[in-house]
Length: 216
Image (cartoon, rainbow, N blue to C red; front, side, top):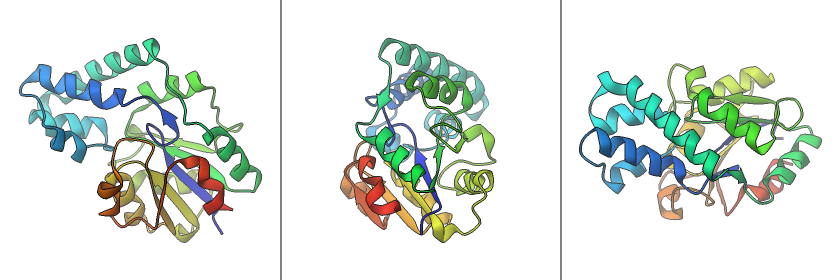
């Protein structure tokens, strides 16, 4: 019985057209050498501060670069507003009606996440039971900290009753690290089936619109 669905945001529940990784690549390239596609893909789903530090090789500049990233990303989202992945709002409502708590976890911090959720009209208590950002925990994915915080916020104690879902290898690694009963890869976002398969998810879904088939 699933008690908690802990779900990634960009590419999993909200469609934003890969803008986050385009902006990340621009900020990295402007600071020095452009990152390769392989390097960018390895950091998909990660805490964006950690990604910027690693991709630029300049940890001392992390806060400055992150500020630039947040400003650019929010401007890009204002120009082309993200939207929920088709069918996902209905899927979340269905599982919540069945008693499954829904938490969103993200490598964004609150400066990006809060306006993003406001833009799609998702509110705590009405559509979601918890939101956990990278700046809420000591370490981001692949560590399980965000999932474990979501469990604490929603009163769930047994990791086997948790379903995690995301569109990157790091999402899957974090789910396994948390000991989640279901660790789901989703094909609606950043990475390909082969990249997700390598991490041995328990399930792969084309889209999180199919969440009720697993969670209830």
